[in-house]
Image (cartoon, rainbow, N blue to C red):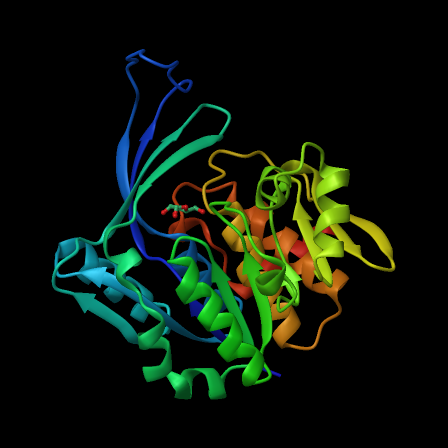
Length: 302
Ligand code: RIB
């Protein structure tokens, strides 16, 4: 069964510098190569799902500029329905300044631009997109009232809701209780509830109504937590060159697995494989694998 996924989220052009290490505060260092790549957590997750074989529709905003046209054209090439990604006449397309060190670790600063002009009103105009999908995927690079409205509309239309709370901000029980699969990394899990430890964050999130908590642990894999217990799904061991969009690769592939009827564990394995392949390649969207590559990767693991 082909997954039908609706992504409400961000599109950014990534401006990436590779450097031997990250600079200290107030320090200037000489880096290496510079490159631009299509990115943004929303668009990355949309592309990850499309390359896994899902039919994907995106709702978002870009500016009336070259980056905006490039991002839209690139998503269309991946077969994503972009009719609900509108061009904002006032704001510039979102960009992300990224540094990647020799170990593939990154720091990211986003200038959101047009992403912040995505209003709840535009969701109502895209009602058809909600009735056609079976999974909603969203993140926090769009305004919180829009994300919240998207989740409410998704629930009303019987979609399963996947929320990747990145970048993290405090979230209410009203939002969390409507989410079917909540996918933070360790730091984000603690930040959304203001907890000092991961265990305390897990306890609070379950208490606030989260049904399936999938915590991404980087090279260690993911931890699935439900009210019934915990289970770790280990990562595949690879040589990382660039970890940008590894989390997005996981989320897009995981959502595809769910939409295809997989169990949470099977979907997490699909997500882990997509993330493992993505970190062996440079850039956000260029690093995201096709389903065929993931299947070959699984073959090589046996
Ligand atoms: O998750 C990676 C993404 O975060 C990058 O593509 C960048 O645009 C930021 O949104």
